[in-house]
Length: 344
Image 1 (cartoon, rainbow, N blue to C red):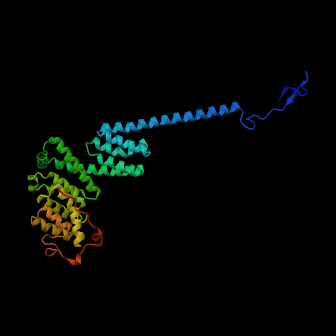
Image 2: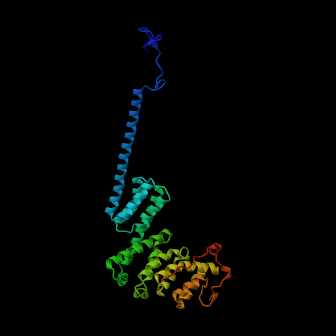
């Protein structure tokens, strides 16, 4: 409360003190003014502290991501690949520790001078699909294991004199060492792919050993052999009868199939199954027959894609191949083949 001089009559000296009640201020029923400022100051300090903590945490994480990058570079991994992987990890909320677990197998491969690109690619694909980090790690470890197993087979094979001679003859203007590194990477990756498709190690060994026929070596057809190794697990006979797949691919190599033609052979085989409704072993016999007749590779592929199993006129099937009681399974008939791609 407070007092004021009040003159009700207007006469001189007619002033008197009047007690007025205290008016409700804007803070009535609320927080006093100084307490509001105190609360605001505490709130601002909390926000500032949180921001500082967030910044420090971000800097710490950035440092850990940088550690992953430096470790990979030290192992020999391409820096651009790693930086792209780190960027994707940050976008997907993958922590540095999780990223390290994913790319760890690639680092180990690089340290042992083994191909690592497929491991990094699989980690990138997994993050793009938001696959859990633990699941990605399992896949990358599996791929890395296949690469290591493949190298144990491929390296001794590449060291053989006839293989080195083929690689050297086909190097063109490229330096021999660079050419051999390129072939080594290709063969190791193809062998690893075969293992992922449940191909036995002995099957890979047998194919590589049997592929070195005098005709293949004389033609320096090492690129076709590499294509054959890639096609090996795709051949419809490979799971139940890998020996047949090896024989057919080696015969195709001897017949002068180019790498592109070798790559088409599994699809052509499946197309022949689809159109002829014959089981795989009968189609294999038909392909054997065509190869023995010295039919050009392009014609053999065309025949197979059209369902002409044994060559000759359209619809012709050599004696012993048309066994109607042994038609292919419904599953084989229902699998429509792809359109044949252009070949080299």
